Image 1 (cartoon, rainbow over the protein chains, first blue to last red):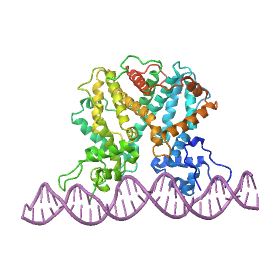
Image 2 (image 1 turned 30 degrees about the horizontal axis):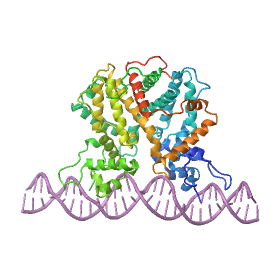
Image 3 (image 1 turned 135 degrees about the vertical axis):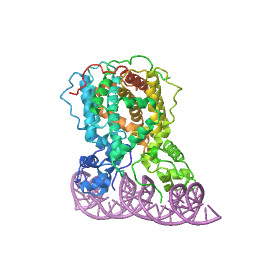
Image 4 (image 1 turned 90 degrees about the horizontal axis):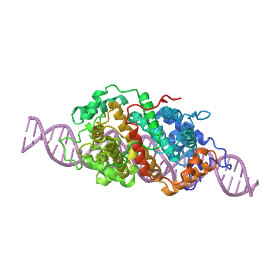
Amino acid sequence: MAGRAAEPEVIWARPERAGRGPKPAFSRQDVVDAAVRIADADGIDAVSMRRIAAELGCGTMSLYNYVPRKEDLYELMVDAVSAEYAFPERPSGDWRADMTDLAHQTRAIMYRHPWLSRVMTTAYGFSPNALRYLEWCLGCLVPLDVPAGLKMQLVAMVNGTVMATVRNEQALAERARGLPWTEEEEQAVRGAYLMGQVASGRYPHLAALLAESAAPADPDEIFALTIARLLDSFATAEPGRGSVTPA
Amino acid sequence: MAGRAAEPEVIWARPERAGRGPKPAFSRQDVVDAAVRIADADGIDAVSMRRIAAELGCGTMSLYNYVPRKEDLYELMVDAVSAEYAFPERPSGDWRADMTDLAHQTRAIMYRHPWLSRVMTTAYGFSPNALRYLEWCLGCLVPLDVPAGLKMQLVAMVNGTVMATVRNEQALAERARGLPWTEEEEQAVRGAYLMGQVASGRYPHLAALLAESAAPADPDEIFALTIARLLDSFATAEPGRGSVTPA
DNA sequence: ATCCCACTACGTACGCTGTACGTAACTACG
DNA sequence: CGTAGTTACGTACAGCGTACGTAGTGGGAT
């Protein structure tokens, strides 16, 4: 009988194989790589067990010898691309520079794998490469003299910001996938609706803003400034003026 | 023949009905409300066209007279709960206080509708209530003397941060849904794996951090401080020290 | 008053999904 | 050298979104 008892487990703690039966034709990594390849090429929704099996040239159900559930596959995929981080020998000593570099690396990885920003919102946890990343971050933040908890918040905040930024850029493109019209048409229609609404006079501040900054700024520059601003806010342990409590 | 030509369109611009035939049994809002009710009760994955139809007591395909595609339904759902924002008569004049209140409202809405933080990462756009929200934000930010583009970044950043924070909290609970074990078991297993890894000595900084702050801090407090810190960083137009360019 | 046709309602069906289960072949261990 | 545990995988099932066809309703034009 295939499969294992349905007990709580983490995929990272699950042994890939036992030595008894016939030699497996693939490794777990083969399955994950195939999934990543498909997602890179045709989007995350194209990643089905049947498609992966076809890519590997095996039966669909054979995959369940390597991965217990589809959802675990997502976690494995995230971990797989998290291996793309390139860390220097040691932190530079300038934590702002190090964290800035990491933010740019994260963004680059998300651009290389456009499905990542969506999958991470669901299948994210303390995978091996996530731990490696986190450990490196904390190493970079040694020169920063703030409480330990705050360092965690900083890392979470940087990651969250990069994710939110990239997600915002990619959501529209992803939505157009699988629709009977192109992304350009989608964007045009949505833009037209927005302009129509703004022209209605019901949104004066928004209208003023759109009139003021007609030319959209360079996304790279905005990203760099956003991260810089964010890191600034962690340079001191305490937030500045009050206003912490809501109205 | 049911349905309309497959042309690019925005759901907000699509007229709900024309006057010719028999009176529709429901309104578009009825359908959306039913979907929200199901999602609140049993999670977003329980929202299927068949389930909504059963909730309303009509045939499955009848729903397509009100909503052209499932994906549009998601956008309608996000817009529907976005109506829960309660704005005062006018901005207080203290933009930090106003934005802080908005952040807390967003968080409260996301707690009331635990599916929202996930759906928003996919189905988010300039819906009517999103425009209303944005317009209000810009009104609150009138006292803030920075370029218009920066105000947009501030709003995006606050929203993104709230979303990332809540998503992080809810991802685990959501993952446990539909699994044969409980969320507590899931958390326990993941925690055990993490502790085992940390105890391996491969992650010294992480180990030190976990040892230092054994008691997890109050999430509400962390949230409030995070938002305060974030708003601080927008109080001046330019980021502080250099380090903008990556290494 | 009557006809027309746009419109609503909805049953059926198709292709797709994840995966439970059963069976056959294989191999390392007692 | 059995035999037990493993791999491979075909079949099957429940569920999904939705294309399509048909029946019936009722407002607008004649």
